[in-house]
Image 1: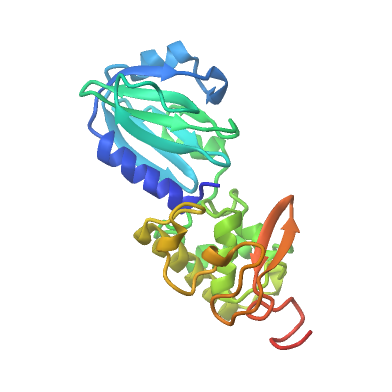
Image 2 (image 1 turned 180 degrees about the vertical axis):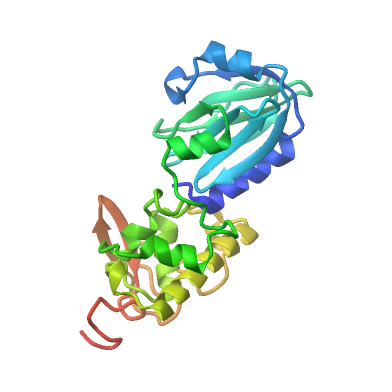
Length: 275
């Protein structure tokens, strides 16, 4: 499932191959994957416009046109962005394509049709309407903002980290990695964390996500690029903790599978080494 590191890689692809380009044609291959405009209306709004910027907010890619209109892509469970020559057959599972005057094409792929492409008047309007919290890698999302986002929350810390309304960008997979690096069990109640633990978790969050971006690793793609000591390559049934060698355990939460080390991430109320 694409998470913040994946979308940052998509953003860099769009910046490299789309920003500064003039849109010659918009092809909406699946009208059901478009919100905020009709296919004809999107064509009218974007045709002959220059893509001015490619931004990311959490798990959303925002392509801004010269008149400040924004096309926002949410990638669902297995979506992606593809660049290739204009005129070639559209890639499999392409839902929307931007053809550029110079001959290139950016295609929004979404095999399971869970994500959407949204047209909005501006990035700020989209973020407001979607009720997204601050991007977790924004400099303004500092330890004070992170502490405030956790304040008074009784839910399990993994649930809180994944709540896009309070902090945007972390999904099921990177929540596991962040908690592993912070040595916190995913079921730990958020309101039980003292400031020292909150600071450790904050540092792990920033470090894990930035390291993944720097390595060119996503949530499920290119995880072999991650440095030694990361959980993700062992995040599967039969995996072992890269730190202590203990077999990784699986848990189900909200219909999704999570993974953790029972030794390095002891259950709430226990100490390392206790049953």
